[in-house]
Image (cartoon, rainbow, N blue to C red):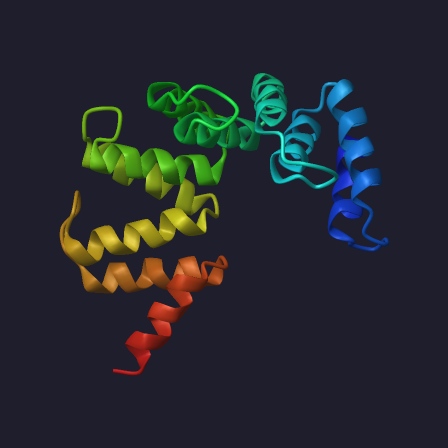
Length: 193
């Protein structure tokens, strides 16, 4: 099932094969039907974005739910976004937050970044800057560029941590190395001073 999902990704992106979204969607469906959460998540993305027809966020939500239940952090995160926006499902920020937490628990680096922001700002739960820092640190250490970038801002501003521009710059550089374009731009801007 995972093999079908992986092959679907190749057809969906055109890596090593001609790009063929209908074929990718069929492969994602086979993976999903076989129990691969990532297959359900990718199939949901196809329906949410209208890869082979009109966008269908309600069907995407159903597939994301299956993906999340099968252990896909992306599925949990994408379903959370639909709940937050009220697209294809009722708008429900509390449910979105629960799904983001589950996605983070499953190792989803973007979900962890979103959870850290919610904790920092008190969105849907009590603000807890110290926990936000721990979530960001864990995700950054695992390769989460957005969390590294968020840590850079926290150290620059002294939010939840002591203000420290040297540590801030180190996290910015790490975020850049991990592919966060805005962090790279900021590093270049600082070099130009």
